Length: 180
Image (cartoon, rainbow, N blue to C red; front, side, top):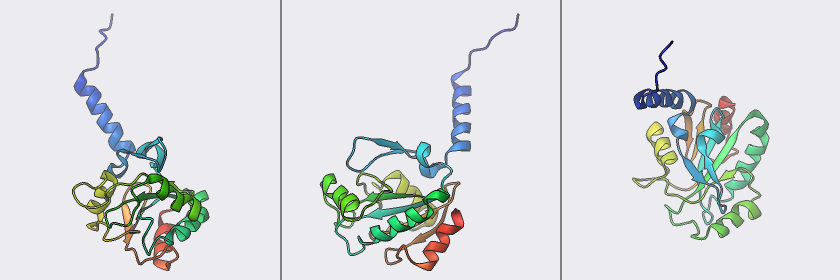
């Protein structure tokens, strides 16, 4: 009669680590709450294998009208798998403390349909892990609101663009198209 072995904790951990490494890039390792809801998004489950644009946002910034261009780009490339993640942040003192007001700016004023998260720090030691990873990959933490990162399907940042680069910029569009 064959002896049935119980899996050891070590073997379970090794299997779990191997599957984590194989399936989910470090960039997407974590969760975040959607803006003005109780819904939590598992970043890996929701975005693994998809091309991404990740941007830190603010409701009261001179660059806030970029929401319109980001939404247009999202609509244009959504069928090709593109996802956009916007993360509000008050790191530059231009975001409301009230998530309802932030949601109104995004969803009502600009018609945003792409994923928006609750507000988090995006730079420094308290930065959300997503933005810490973006900064580690590029050496470029956001210097202001609407810093944009283009990420390939494997979770690697292929380009980063400062706030002044609009969603309509030819270089930005080329970077996005390169990951589709």
